Length: 263
Ligand code: OAD
Image 1 (cartoon, rainbow, N blue to C red):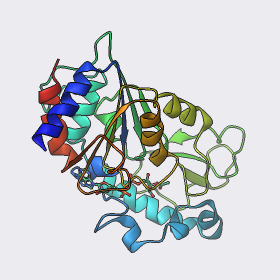
Image 2 (cartoon, rainbow, N blue to C red; image 1 turned 180 degrees about the horizontal axis):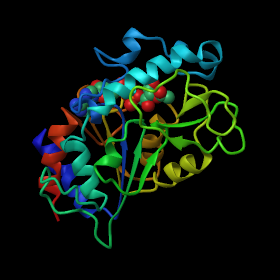
Image 3 (cartoon, protein in one colour; image 1 turned 90 degrees about the vertical axis):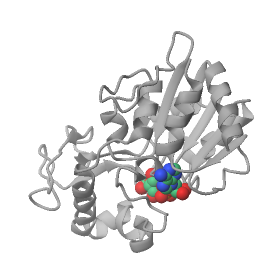
Image 4 (cartoon, rainbow, N blue to C red; image 1 turned 180 degrees about the vertical axis):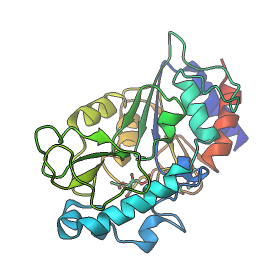
């Protein structure tokens, strides 16, 4: 493992473009439940009942009860060492003393962070160049996509007063401004994410690598010649395809990598 860590650190140190894809696993050490792990959300709930437009159409209150519960759990969560390393690499100083490594961002290194997570933990860690391809659980939009409500708004109340909450513009139902199964990613997000696969190092962190199009990005990067790496507690469908697969917690491995890769 330490050999592989060293190889990846060397690659990162030499890179001009570093792209990082994160999934629920990066937030696990912050107390955020994952979807497919042992205690994962999809072990107890069916995605079809809670995270599709059809589910909302059928029972908006049930869907909102679940999102309201998740918002309540997330409200007490803080970014962990993994988020802070990525934030520092992206050019930000988290300012809380949790990560003392020098930023990797220099005039010659561009970092793009693509996250599937709807929690705000990368944002709260100060991550720059962040694309949130599945949206944010703290944002709502108009279910009827009325002229003013379609773009969405922020609502951090926990719990929400009335479920389902209403669009402040047209009075119709509001929905969580997240991407549900069966929905397309925003075209600008997809474009930037695909562009970011043209990189020197593509690092995937804490994702089960089964939900597309996110899961395809590492393969796109590899086809274009990137050095590819994965950090995960366990093997995933991507493990055999990447150059380096590191098994362990992101909150442990990323700080070690940061120490080794320090410019
Ligand atoms: P998953 O729950 O599918 O996968 C989380 C991954 O993180 C698993 O492979 C775990 O082994 C790994 N993991 C857990 N703890 C870890 C840790 N401390 N360090 C490193 N890895 C760890 O979550 P995602 O891959 O993010 O989409 O799921 C992708 C999408 O499916 C989500 O964005 C969501 C979900 O359904 C929608 O809701 C549209």
